[in-house]
Image 1 (cartoon, rainbow, N blue to C red):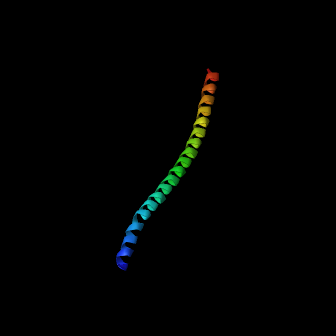
Image 2: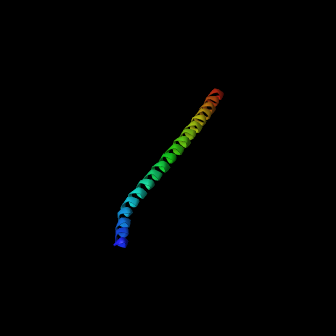
Image 3: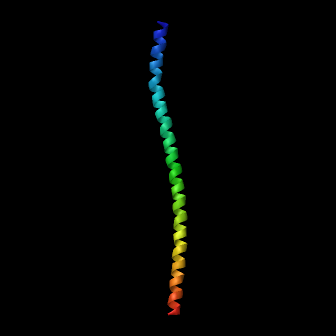
Length: 69
């Protein structure tokens, strides 16, 4: 009987471990998504700053060309 009760106890723990594993994987996935979104936001801001600089340079070139004409 002792062996059977320990086997039943083991089967009772398996679903708990399964749900605990799902929770851990979910938290890990959420953390990875947050890190990805933060990195993407930072890279998008850098790209926008570079585009602004490019627009200013192109605008100055057009102004210079108009002054020559």
